[in-house]
Image (cartoon, rainbow, N blue to C red; front, side, top):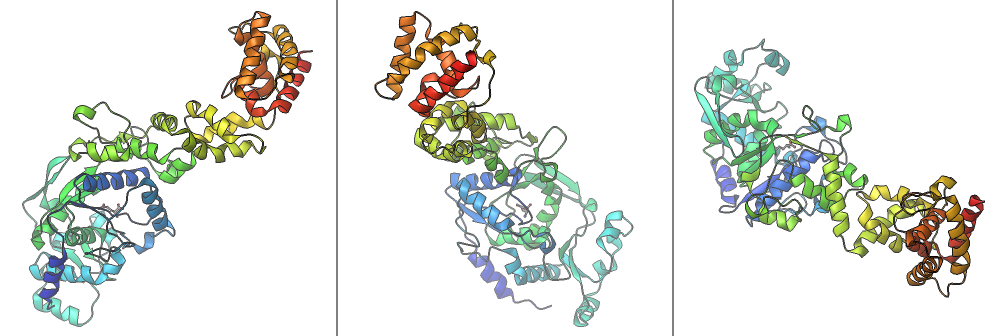
Length: 495
Ligand code: GLU
């Protein structure tokens, strides 16, 4: 096949040089799992740290595995996380198109270029992959590997279908370097003549990623360690083309426990699931950053990182090759820290929909409820259950009125509530301060500890042992009418 060499020269000329360029290259084959998010984050951080360029590339050559809506989920996740890209299908760029299925022609040209260079060959055999996998077919003996140029040309002229395979040297070794795994050397005889271009003219992932990473000027490739075993074959491709090999960073899988990788099939959460479960994006990102990467130097002990801080602190040398275990309890801790650190208005905004799941009464001020919750919740999803009593006083038993520390029991509580009712009925206005001052003054005049008075009030107005906020805050939020009604019910319960 004659090739137009000027095409390759033009493609070379388009490649931006002299800058760090990284890419996130998801396949739209499912949801955005935690490992994907981590890869996206690390690649983004490498680019941002170096003032380089971050590229989004869609790897959709495996048409059988495409999942509808997956691309949208990926875009949405990236945007929500603030992982903005400089080049990609939606924003364009100098080395597009950025969707592999739109680059079809190009892979075919590069595959044929490799054939011309002798590093690949057209294979007309009908041998199927399963035969190769089972070892019943020895690729080393493949007659197509050694077809004469003439026979090959005649098969092509006859329109015989073919795949293009990489011609792996049968002897010698190939060594590649990975940032966290170091130098890895393999015997070439253990590598198979992998298919680069399929019968339908579409490339395999193994070929497309090399061509694209080169043509897009990618300097650092971050991906899952499942690709480690293919890396020597990629290197042989780079070498055959005469291209510079990028820096490889293979990340070990994110595990559910010592033995198992996280997997959707086993119910492990995706990014979207985590958000639905009440985690904040910033907390998830922070936690995911530390799954397999550790800061060094001054920041070695630091755990809480904003995205900007991560950009400053990130260094690929901190990426570990040991698999990280995804620990929800640890994520809870990060989330609680983030919730506490939010400005109160922002927390109130985030909490409102959760409060409104159980608190339908429009008279209840959700911002006031949120203020009680901010220091007391790890996840937003805990909120509905914590505040349900504002709408409906739950059924509760008189035993709730007994509390050793507050020195209360049903009898004492009856006494307290009997005194509290007229005092609150007579309060001039219903502010936090008046409720507070009225109750404190009453405790003093009765000569009891504040807690002895507050305990029965809180139980009567909430009907729960544990509440966000104390008696004063709860009475204030409930309003005078409802508070008095509940206090009377409490008193009636006490007989
Ligand atoms: N499309 C591949 C994946 O989603 C990308 C691997 C890579 O980054 O090279 O696993």
